[in-house]
Length: 118
Image 1 (cartoon, rainbow, N blue to C red):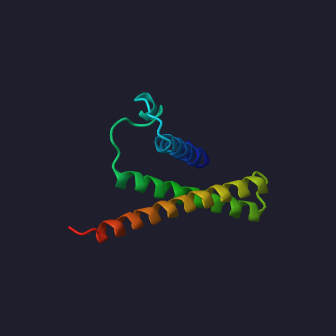
Image 2 (image 1 turned 90 degrees about the vertical axis):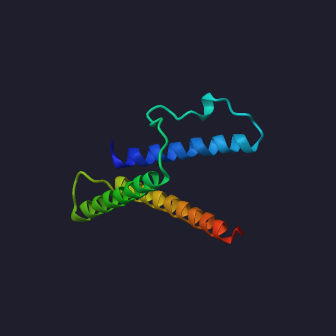
Image 3 (image 1 turned 135 degrees about the vertical axis):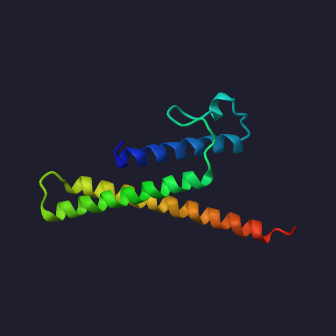
C-alpha cells in the first residue's frame, strides 16, 4: 500500500468517526451495525499507544516520501511532475497538522486529569 493510500485511508477513517460522533451529538441512536469497524480494520481492541505509534510512523513516511519526490524533481527526474510533488507535500502537511492536533488534545486531556481533585 503506498503512502498516499495510507493517508487517504486514515483520513477516511477519521471522517467516518467524525460522522458517527456528529450523529451521537444530534441525539440519533446509532445501530449496533453503524458502530462496528469498517471492513479491513482489525476487530480486536487496539491500544492507544500502538495507534499513536502507527500514526507517527505514517506521518514520518509521508514526509520522507514528499521530500524524496521534491529532491528528485529538483534533480530533473523526468518521472516526477510538479503536481505529484505538490500533492504529496500537501498530504504530508495535512497529516502532520492532524497529528499535531491529536497531540494537543492528548496534552489538554492530561492537564484536565491533573487538575482534578481526588
